[in-house]
Image (cartoon, rainbow, N blue to C red; front, side, top):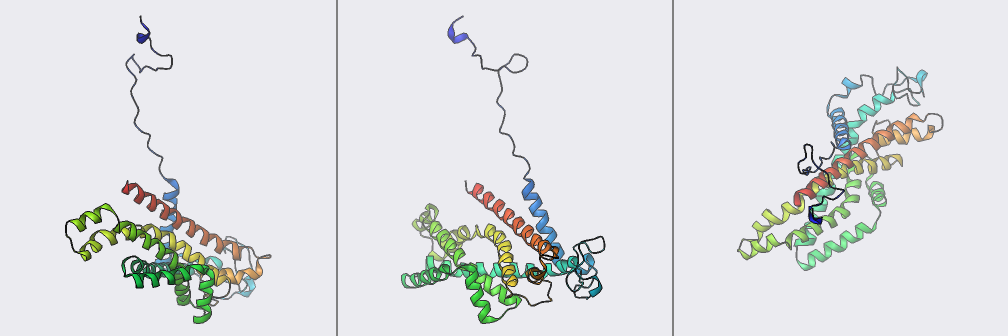
Length: 296
């Protein structure tokens, strides 16, 4: 037997003495965090879109001073506030308004960003330069500071929160959209379309804008939770929806006075906000990774 006929010590034989077979790539386990996040988001939107009275039959504005500041119990799952109102009922009834603020601010932000980013990437030198300077000036302001400025000018309300958060977060998205459009415009398939003599408008509608806008699906999911957090921050500072509205940020604002004696007034609404923000962020990252895999 020669050296070449010897089998290395580390070689493994298949059952029955045959040659070893290669196993295929292991399938990744089921994405449990993504599934949990999707279920949470569906639950939140179902609560917001369905009749809140079906899930929380109590009146969210009914006063019961005898049961004021009661801790969570079988009768009041999330406890009561300083006026005896059931906190669980108020959170359920406030889901619709909070989600409307978050979704509305996200839609406004992406609409403004799409206009500014498209002008900055596709317009003439003068218009593009002007838009870029405006975006840079807005981007220099912290989001919360710009939102506070708009609320101070327009006055506190739900629609003011939508405008303030939408305008405050738009500059960052505008720069991202501008980069996406420039990357798509300088790609090989656009150069091939130009070489084939296709009209400029057709190229923009068919190739540039669809490929530049596609990542916005992931950005939208990421932005909803972020917008709700920003809107809740404004309400926590007393610049959002006026009490006794059950909007989640307003609940935080009302409960901060009793944080040492009634922890549930701030912890439970804050936990709801955090859960929704984490769920939408997880879904957004999942969509983003799926889009990146599709491009490869």
